[in-house]
Amino acid sequence: VFRIPVRLHYSWFVASGLMPIGLIFYFHGAYTWWQGAVFGLIAVLLFFVCVCLREMARTAVTLAWHVPVRSVTLAVFGGVPRITEADTRIGSELLMATVGTLASLVLAAIFYLGYSIMSITADTSAIAEILRWQYFFNLMITVFNLIPGYPLDGGRFLRAIAWAANRNLNRSTRITSLMGFSIGILLILIGLVLLIRANQWFTGITVAFAGWLLQDAAWAMRRQARIRNALRGLDARYLLTDDYTPIKEQLTFAVVRDYIINSGQRCFIVLEEGELLGILTLKDIQIPEKRWGSTTVGQMMTPASKLHTAKPDEPVASLLEAMEEFDIDQIPVLDDGKLIGIVMRDRVLRFLKARAVLRA
Image 1: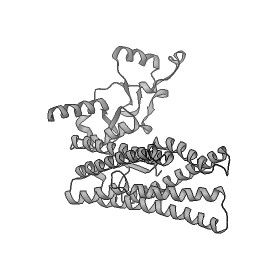
Image 2 (image 1 turned 90 degrees about the vertical axis):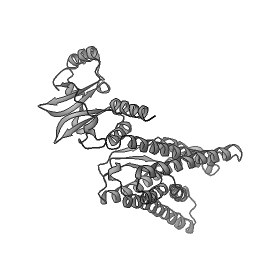
Image 3 (image 1 turned 120 degrees about the vertical axis):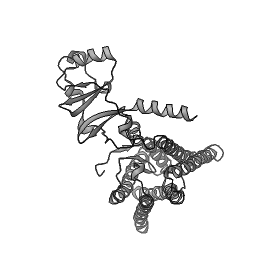
Image 4 (image 1 turned 60 degrees about the vertical axis):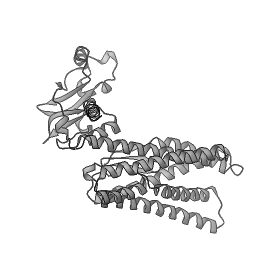
């Protein structure tokens, strides 16, 4: 979306199971179980489109404010954009939260209008019911996102207000994410009570699941804020290393394999006259033994165009977030297109551990 990497959150896999099950029971008696399952899958797809539209609206507004969005994780309750602390502004936070809420309300109104028109014409088909469910889903997403816990829209409102008051973004993030975590735990408990005591299994599971998502996202934001605070003032230049082995893309894996066995090195930088061509890691090496002598580094490596790279003045905290989000262990640092070093995840984690020990 807008050339921004989008990752699908695991919550969609749970939702794609919960919604069809809910509609199977809802349509029980009027339709067969497999018809209810099909209606449920249609509802999931429509809801996914709604969440995508909601996030596209927020991202468009954010980019219009010239705030770069590095990536977006698309969860059931909406998208969680990755924006560096240096690029975050009070105005953009308030606008993102407002646009997200308005987008969900507009979608809810559209589906309610469609359902109302079909009801007036005495159409009580499954299509009308699916429209009604979409209205309900989008309305619930609006209400859920107004909870005053970061990273929900309500939490963004609260964080922006707290930030304006104390002029400390990191502290405001930790406060509002703690609120989000606490509310998430409360929702889990409410869901369990509904499930066990009130015998409302579908509602109970849904509420508990929503609480789990909130506390999980809030705790991740709080952890991220602590890491940003620990790495404050440090840029990529500070923790990069030039202790790497450059190799040519024409080398065969048979040659590289011998070096891996003798050195234990797990990452190789592919260079050509100082220009970064790509990176070869152990994850890239997935070829049968009979092709070791014919497969070249250039065929196995991750090309530079697909790599996450950084500038020397980029905050180390942002690099660590990218490493964790995309499951990579190193990020090349380029200055005017030339490689000057790489930042390794284990080096950053060792630095964090050393700082924690010294502060304790």
